[in-house]
Amino acid sequence: MPNPLIFAVPKGRILEEALPLMARAGVVPEAEFHDKKSRALSFACENPEMRLIRVRAFDVATFVAHGAAQAGIVGSDVVEEFGYPDLYAPVDLAIGHCRLSVAAPEGEVSGALPSHLRIASKYPNLTRRHFEGMGIQAEVVKLNGAMELAPSLGLASRIVDLVSTGRTLLENGLVETNTILDISARLIVNRAALKTDERVGALVERFRALVNEREAA
Image (cartoon, rainbow, N blue to C red; front, top):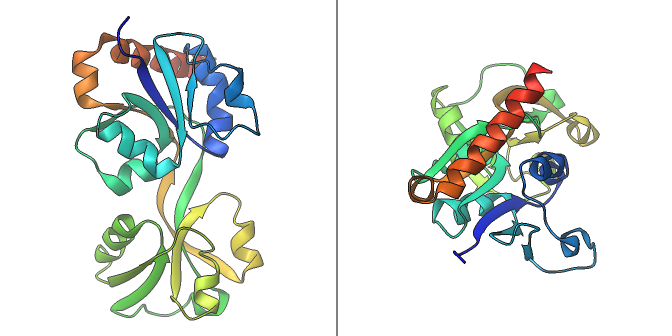
């Protein structure tokens, strides 16, 4: 039997939305995957030629880009942040919609921006590119959570973070000033695996057909 095809998925909201689509594409984890008490990270699938790994979203891209996993699902924010040359995102799954936005304290959204800003984000590359395009030097303080606290505690004057409803921003006295990127979940594959493993190409075609079928309905 050939080595199993490793399919990487992120923890959280995208995964919940992706599971029905994955099932229709033949990526069906066995029961342990759904056990909330399980601390396992790697899971068998109903198809014995496939295994599922569940990791942090940023790590999904790293596993796939370096060939440790051959395919996976992750938000387009992660794809754009890393820009791995060995990562290919052939299918927009049209789920997991949100946006990457700049937010500032309510009283600081008007007037011209200074030439230098300190910004809290877990997206340093996207943040710098965005502000460079505006002629502003961005000093990025990398945080992995609790971003909304940064302005009130003097750590940064702005934040760049994922926004869905905007409620968390409002509850912390912040407002969106502009959107950097509209985000949806993507099927990603390792470029070398796509060329050498026919199972990867077949998987891409199954997901693409399902998305096209849903859009045509």
